[in-house]
Amino acid sequence: GAGVSQSPRYKVTKRGQDVALRCDPISGHVSLYWYRQALGQGPEFLTYFNYEAQQDKSGLPNDRFSAERPEGSISTLTIQRTEQRDSAMYRCASSPGKWRDEQFFGPGTRLTVL
Amino acid sequence: AQKVTQAQTEISVVEKEDVTLDCVYETRDTTYYLFWYKQPPSGELVFLIRRNSFDEQNEISGRYSWNFQKSTSSFNFTITASQVVDSAVYFCALSRRVDSSYKLIFGSGTRLLVRP
Image (cartoon, rainbow over all chains, first blue to last red):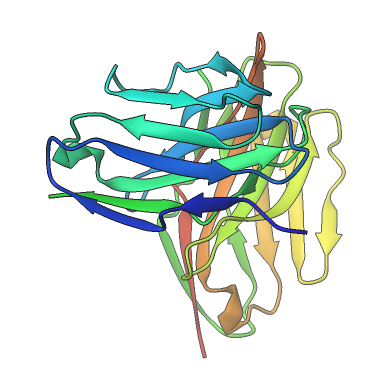
């Protein structure tokens, strides 16, 4: 079956612009996660959804970052008024729902803010 | 605090050598899960193994083996007879459950280079 997909794969934007990153999880997966991975580092947790409910947003760096999953499937991570420090790989992952389950990661969106 | 430490930033070996990647974790949870992921040069994150905190049996899968020792809070990964295709960044991760949230806490990764 299809894995987790993310779009766009690459995004270059100018400082101050808003960007929206999309994640399409594996069909039927209840849990959806967003992570951010800086160069040379491991992924860092941003936020977690259980169905459409955002259960944890403790990793979002500031209020310019928001995420939604309105129908419990596709999710969008939005960054407003982008800054150069937002440049990173943004990864989405999904899992069947139990915390012991492995998370399946998408290919990521490489965001570059000029 | 919950933390995963991968002290080896980079390891370089010649093909067919055995190599061990170290992972040390910190947690106060009594129930947790540990994972290893592989990130090849193409960039995706590939799941390798999951181990729960109550199962200290070592696991072997082909050339890969994992040694989980709760007493030393370590979950080390060994590749036997390494191959060039094993070249990648390897991440160890700790899964924890807090209220209704589950998250993975990753180490900073170990870059493995296998030379022909």
